Length: 276
Ligand code: C2E
Ligand code: CA
Ligand code: CA
Image (tube, rainbow, N blue to C red; front, side):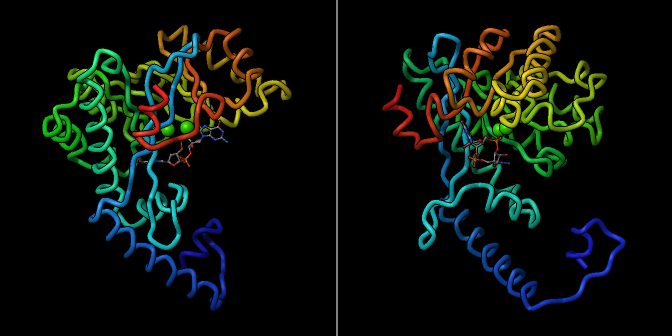
């Protein structure tokens, strides 16, 4: 049934032993993920975000699972599973806590106290009735400065119930928490909603940045997003910046924040501090 639904519904699908194997592998992975969360084997890695002068202004926290047999597992392999099983709630809280712990460490020194940490929030977490309460609790328990925390949301999760989304964002904004719209340009990009949402930043999706120098459409989209951000009074950051050429194109069109392999891959907190 799930296979048929995945194929767009209203279709037939025959059972194959492969499906059974996949289902078994999924449930084994789920059990392992549950244990990993209890044992703290999910780590936060940090990828630098830099300004026009190349100075590090903060980092995006990205989850990595240190698996005893498989080594370091990237989020693409367990976030969807966590979302399907509801473990995302726990995972999100864990990542938020790790990010806040990092902020507390950085708050102690003049050299690092300005750094912003961005955390990804999944749709299911954001829609949880106690989402705001959870964030507030983690901020209070860790003592992290709310002004240094940024939450990355995606459009689809905000458009589900715009009024409620705005209310939730505003509740956290009064504490100083910032909001960034991730993967911008890949969804509906509804301009009517965009101006109503209390956002601070747009993130240009890496799919536009990748070919910004060779694909005229991608270049046009990137330029348009930058102009849109400026006219709405929002910050704009380009992600997936890998080359100097991409950076100078984006800079030339008014983008002043960059994230990508050109500046550093996601790294452990210790490696990030060494880079600083
Ligand atoms: P994202 O939020 O769009 O994060 C950016 C992804 O692009 C990261 O992949 C990062 O490693 C990768 N990246 C950064 N710079 C470059 C570059 O220059 N070139 C290329 N090719 N890739 C680059 P990662 O870490 O594998 O994360 C994948 C996705 O998993 C994230 O996409 C995010 O949607 C999700 N994710 C990661 N951690 C969390 C988390 O703690 N919670 C939630 N809900 N989602 C998470
Ligand atoms: Ca992100
Ligand atoms: Ca993104």
